[in-house]
Length: 212
Ligand SMILES: [Zn+2]
Image (cartoon, rainbow, N blue to C red; front, top):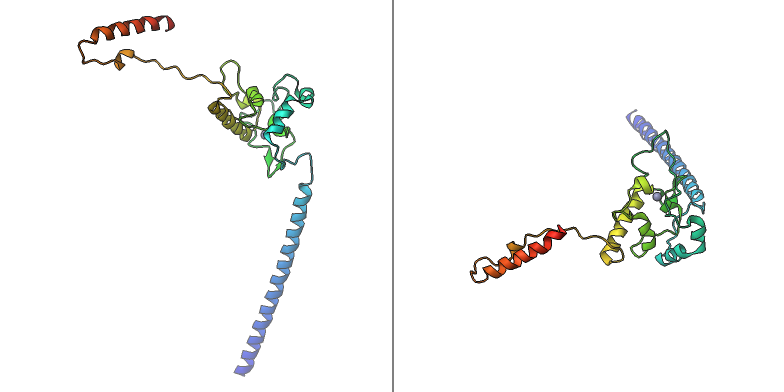
């Protein structure tokens, strides 16, 4: 009786284990099938050549493009952001622009920003003709995204390349004005040189007054 029960129990367990294995196998097969379908879907999405941005364009090509006839017909003398218009819901544009236009090498929006939409506009410290279009002629500062409508990622890249270009010396910038009190820098203890220092300080102050 006991042995019979044990046998039945063992048999039952084996049956359950077998059934579980079958279930797990079928589930695994189902998973494989869905993975395959997803991969196919991804492959289909990557085919679109107009939105593909995986190709790396060298800066030299961008420099040539900015001098070319194609660029002239596309933009003319205007900066690249001049004729771009954002599309947004409602009457007022959002304060911040889009976070990015290109995700995983593909344009993820219908209206990419002025830099992202043109593949041949490469932000680089050497590409000064492009960088100058994003610098205000009045105060030499980088124009905000509310004017240029760049996405935040490209705006950050623009800031980095402008700072690098200024560091190299390809773009100019004003050094902040420093006002010095010159008598602080002259020797004070020596009595013989006091007269000379006073004269020099007075002369320096007289020379400074018209400027200030
Ligand atoms: Zn963008």
